[in-house]
Image (cartoon, rainbow, N blue to C red; front, side, top):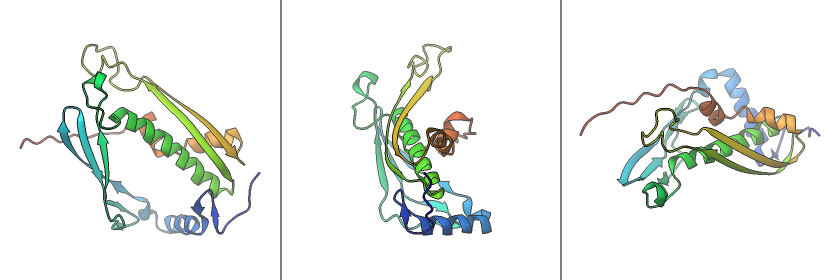
Length: 186
């Protein structure tokens, strides 16, 4: 059931701001270009730390984040780590689930569809022989990822699936993205 709402909030989103943002993007497509970034420092073994604060978007450098987000990554003991945080491939699962849920909530609100609950479980399979160089026949990354979602709200399962496809992280994972690695010594 579609709720006709153009003001106030829906699904925790400010609809007035959403409509203002969409209007600004239609009027000036250059505002849609964003540059996100992070810095990463190796700590020890499989442990490293990323810091995320600034980004460029909506035509300017953002200065609203007063403090950086600090993300700790490590490996579990069985993979020679000290387990001080999720490993990088676990962060990928988090990013994918979080982005899909956010995309669905946003698109549902834009169409006046109320969501009251979303829960998801995600898992993926990796054969670490590819990572450690024991087999050229095995991928280094995930061989398969499964996301199971339960929700309550006005959307049909078909609408929910359609909105899932608007996730940028899903697009990043499902389609090749050019990656440039510049290495400098010292």
